[in-house]
Length: 252
Figure 1 (cartoon, helix red, strand yellow):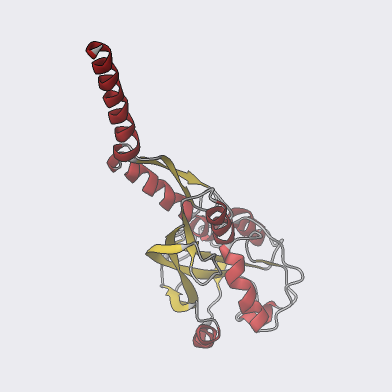
Figure 2 (cartoon, rainbow, N blue to C red):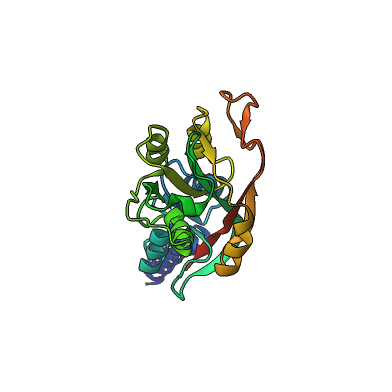
């Protein structure tokens, strides 16, 4: 009868409105942003994105997914486990990945102990180095530079940033390579005790940029890192010439 038909029509309309609200107004559930190592800049930035989305976005929820860095993030995108990722530019990526925005520039920090004789990359030959964990962006940038100068990296040990800096201070490794944003918490804490200094790449920077087009000339400005144990209260005392790479927000 008409009452039954009317009730079915009304129920179908309510159900249709619910699904329209769920999928078009509320969105399609959760989206995942692949970030980086716990305590790193990528992780902090990703958390900022997630908090902003929670405050302003009604169509979906943004979750962060920690990783070892750019190579793993690209794999997470390709496999569909992540919808967005923060990566370093200049690394091979699948055709399905595209850039959303350039975020900031990351700088290669090369650290040794104060008493070290090292003043250039070639002097690192045969030394015990830490270039970052396997699959990290620091390692991807650092290895080609050392190979360019014929440096023997057979004694290299893969370590997370905090552990690498601890071992450097205690003399267990001779140099640490870290690609990170300026004012990185790991580097700030690592140099705070005054036992470490930066290696200046100097005049070789322009040659490295010519050899590796994904790099750009950059620097660690003088007095960037607070260091109360030093007379000047901050370090480095003068600008340290280095190379860097842009960090990017990408999606599938």
